[in-house]
Length: 115
Length: 112
Image (tube, rainbow over the protein chains, first blue to last red):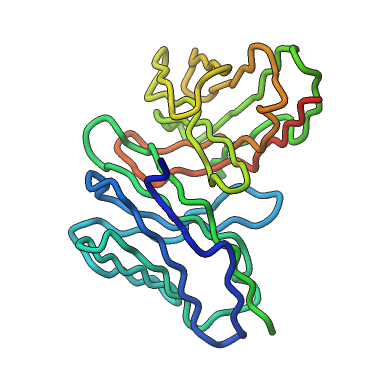
C-alpha cells in the first residue's frame, strides 16, 4: 500500500512560469514532509521541508504548502528555470520517537522546464 | 567537506552470488539508511541503523543484510543475488535527531 503518492508521473512547463508538483499521503501519523530533487546519475538532494504544525514554508523560489485535512502537499517553483528539470520526490516521516530519518517516498514526478 | 560515498558506482553480478555494496560517511552521523529506487515505486527503505551495533529491517529487507561496526560505514550485503534485486541503491545518513537525510550518489546493480 503506497502511503505517499505522486499521481503525476511528469510535468512540463515553460521557463518563467510556475511549476506545481503535488503529493498525497494516507498515513495520519506522518508529521514531517520533505521534497527531494534528483538529477540523473546522482543521489537525491534535500530541497525543502515542512512540519505538520505549519501550512506553508518558503525558501527562495520554492514554497511548500501543506493541507492536513486533505492529506495533501504541494511544491511551487516560481519562476521555473531550465536547471529545475529533474525528478522531484515527495517524502514523509514521523519526526519523533524512533523514526528519525526514516522516510517514505512517493513515486516521483519528472519536471521538464522548457526554455 | 563532509560527504557520503558509495562504491562501486556500477556492478554487474550473476544470480546466486553474494554482493556487498559499500557506504561511507564522514559527517559522524549516527543514523544511516539503505534505499532502493525502482520505477513506479520511488525509493523504498531496505535497512537502517541508529548507531554502532544497531540494525533494523525496513520495508523491503528480504534477501539483504547490513552490519554496523563503526559510525562511518554501513555495508549492504545481498546474500544470494536475484534478478529482482536489479535496482539503483542509495545510502543515506542523518543526524541523531534529524529528519533530513543526505544521500550518496547511488550504486546501479544489475543481476544477470
